[in-house]
Amino acid sequence: MKIPDQDDWKRAQEGLDEGYAFRHFFGKSLEEAFRLFENHALMYQEDLSYMPEYPFKYYLRAYIYYLGCQRSQGDSDAASCFLHLIRSQVKNRYEWLEDSWDSIERVLFRLSSDQAFFDASEKIYGDFGRKVDQILALRETEIQRRADLK
Image (tube, rainbow, N blue to C red; front, side):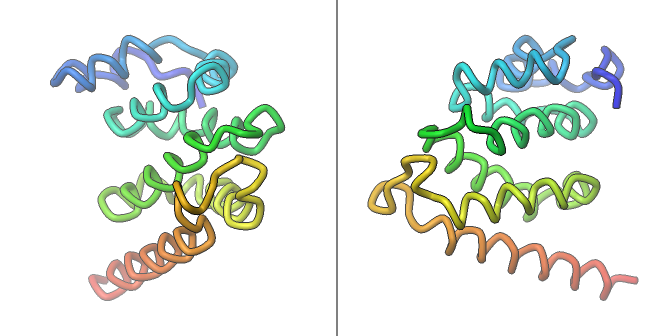
């Protein structure tokens, strides 16, 4: 995939949040985006929700890579926010996730099996395993809904 260009971001100036996403990520390589997540994932993960499709797909890869590496240890907010992002996308824009689902699923399973790695207390963040199960169930419902439409 190529770094998203101006055409890929054409709708990025429609709102305040979209503009922030554009200013934070426009022209960034995956390595540069990874560093954004590494430095302050809680701040930058929200930008993904306001990106057009191609930039979302591109920069989601950096977020996935960050959560899959040792540098994310103790980043409970990044882990929790990923679950919320993926749940929202499954419900609202599942087609944006289809090409990356294998990578997403690996992160989901890591989150559910090693919540302690992220220092994410169940009292504060809830049970990641349960949240992952809910996401997977939503995905199955969406896949079935699409099959029924055919």
